Image 1 (cartoon, helix red, strand yellow):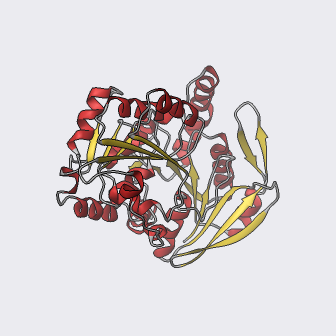
Image 2 (cartoon, rainbow, N blue to C red):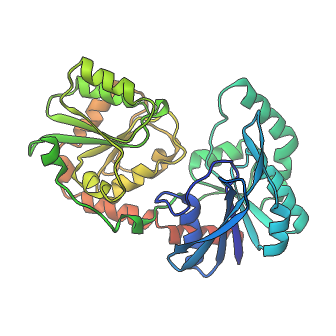
Image 3 (tube, rainbow, N blue to C red):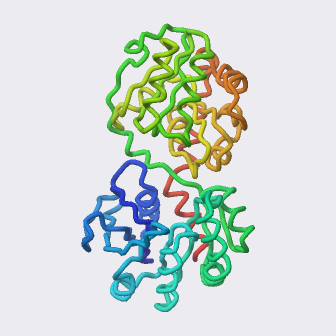
Length: 372
């Protein structure tokens, strides 16, 4: 088949980046002999094409110009009909059924006789009157067409599937997000425990991601404040909440809170491996690639019950879901994976679980079985 994956918001992303889900899925399809293009918004406002080397050939990335709908901050892509006529795709994947661009592209596919499916990660309506109104309009006027014409809805999580089923989708399937393991082959190892001044029995609690409100990095600083001195919290990343975290660190003189800033992809494997537990106290997480990364390197995860972690973490050996942001509950869960128990032979089991369940090639095989 010839497949197009449409990224239907106006954000731009380098498809060659380590966590590009479009590229990961494209490589998975490609491994089974299919030709795949990724179509996305142009950062320059100009039409362009480039190829990115995949595992089994090259994936073409087509960037198209768009007009922005200001109120919705949604794109209207130009050249979609022209691209479909020229490329003669057999199947088009449209990301997120709630995006207005998804509806417009679906209409073009229908008129061109090209089958399409929905790839869904969102599992709740964004807060605010604007989005409540848009959801009402979308549900009444746009969603019936999408439900009727799509060959299926492929949901990243069971919560995303429930979200669509509550809105009338009947042909839905959970297809998890994968991880491109090859991105971690080039690594630069260092002794992080020595660099941070940690002792043999000190516990290293790791967070990797944006320091932003929805991921509650200030709560991690609070946990450091409530913890024993030998429990060290290491935060990797930058973001608007860094100032508040630093303020807590300085005000309370927290020697067990370490802010490393942004690290390269090559530096992360050894840090994941040397951590005793990974924490992700997010309020909203469509998936949480860092959870898979942590398990890949043998480290258990303590997380809030957002959509991705709920599906990923299945046993205590992999981690725990803590429903509330309460210091006592979180410290108990973190303590379960102390410096001794975390290294008790479960690392390899977690690694094998991640490699087996989140291999893009196997995920793509399941996906293809649903669309025929």
